[in-house]
Image (cartoon, rainbow, N blue to C red; front, side, top):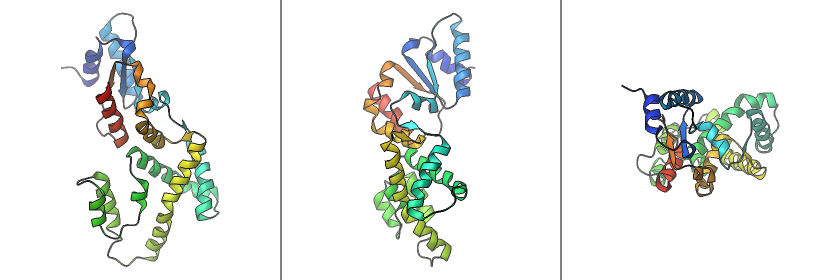
Length: 230
């Protein structure tokens, strides 16, 4: 019985390699596929274009992806405007978590205003999201600790901070876009919104996403668009 990589190589071996794009979740899977493809081909020739999903962004029309430190420095300058001065070393302890949260918001194509809005009644979420929407369940679980209870001083402090987060998110995105810069999740949201203009995919007649088992919303949208247009 063929293993997964062997079966993908077999399924693509007869496709025109220069018009074939194969995308895997990891670099390691890409390397294993190339080895197996060459083994099955058994003669010199072209390989398909093979990319890990992260490197795909580098081929697409997206804002320039900044490194973690550059993102932290830009977020820090904006954070100070909303929350006051503090040492950068202190901000670093939680600043990366803020960026990670913003990344997840964009990867999942979540409406930041709805996410960060203070919820007073869980029925509001039922009206706002489709039945069974995963993001609604996350938000319900979070706000259930605040609704119908007397807030502790720590919760009051948190809610005050929470209400500023959508402003921080918007300002951060505005500053980055002005310089055509961004973070990974932001780049994926941009790709989803501009798929019809992403000419890189026009170079291929056959595009395969292989080995993905837990897609985020932006990956789903990209794959659905390609499935419907290719």
